[in-house]
Amino acid sequence: MVGYFSAPEATALDCTVANKTSPSVPALTTVTVKQSCPAGYTITGGGFNVTGNTTNASDWIMNESYQQGGNWVITATNTNATDGDTVQEKVTCCRVPGH
Image (cartoon, rainbow, N blue to C red; front, side, top):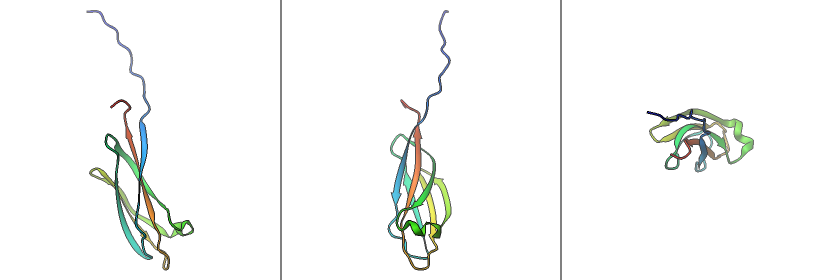
């Protein structure tokens, strides 16, 4: 039998970021936000940004950040004693091109 074999070539992943913004989180309150990836993509990581009053960004504590089933889950606490704020969960989602 005669044939030809071509060595595989590395292909960059096709990645996108899925975002979800929390409702306003009152002062001294903890929020849990869950976000999934678009169809065909797999979760590769996640985190959050403070999206409301960014001068209060240092007032937030990330309690947990983990994958649970098809969602990325964050639990964060607004430690500011007087101001409410919002957070945006950011989930990195990737797939192999052509699949």
